[in-house]
Amino acid sequence: MLKSSSAIVAALVATLTSAAAAEGELNLYSSRHYDTDERLYTDFEEATGIKINRIEGKADELIERMKAEGANSPADVLLTVDTSRLERAKDAGVLQSIDSAVLEERIPSNLQDSDNQWYGFSQRARIIFFDKAELDNPPATYLDLAKPDYKGLVCIRSSSNTYNQTLLASIITNHGPEAAKSWAEGVVANMAREPQGGDTDQLRGIVSGECEIAVSNSYYFARAMRKDVKGLSAEIDMIGVQFPAQEAEGAHMNLSGGGVAAHAPNKDNAVLFLEYLASDQAQQYFSAGNDEYPAVDGVALAESVQNLGEFKADEVDLSAVAKNIPEAQKIFNEVDWK
Image 1: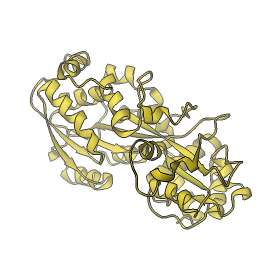
Image 2: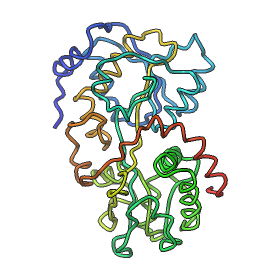
Image 3: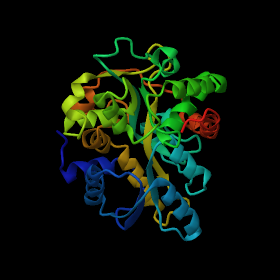
Image 4: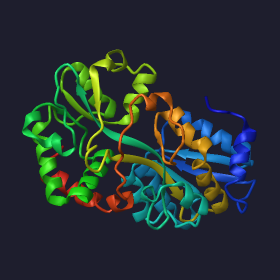
């Protein structure tokens, strides 16, 4: 059980930096749509006296808003999900490089931008799920999803989905563009249906019998184990979990992260907030509140996440992966992945 005392949070924040302001405000632009994040914000406010003003929306809309606002933007911090969107914000010029010894020490180097413009604060493994009653030889790797053995069995999201874009970009990084294109062609040939819905809908496809294999981020499944998710939780025991590429690079990890806005009017407070997100207290809450994996090594996992089992994560540099996202979208278009 997480401790809720604001005094404990204050002690954690006090260790982060002595240079940041202990008053004022923070203007947060966030595309994280989780009600459980409220705890992160209130604990930070109570610990520091800094008031958080939030603007929430879709990631691309927030990035475009920050571009349009230019030097007059009130944004101090952008929070969003997936490496592709973090890189998109960087490419749009709406983030700035920062110098934080705390973040450099706490966040693994492969989970941060090479120019210190964005940092990952929580992770989700992209997992292969399967119907245990119908399939006794599930794909062991992402590349296996393209094998003819699985023709007509795979449920997976559209090519416009950022999780899939980053997954394909990681395959390009790890295996090269030719292997990545062959993989994408094979997966299209193996689809049980045209891509539709979100990650939870891919898992529901196993329950409904539309597919025997689904690709989804870990926290959707963990959430369905922890609480009732319509069309999934009641039959969740029929679904097996396969962490891919355990004898190779390891399971691909999606990021949720953020950075300091390019024209942040409250830059010190913005850096302090990001440092707070890297504290043990906040890291534990990413797991307990939203079934995610912490970015910081050694932080305790929520029971729902622990129940997924231990696995090897791909430690590829996600900043390098992000640079292959345009190539990934090109491949998706070439193989007619809807």
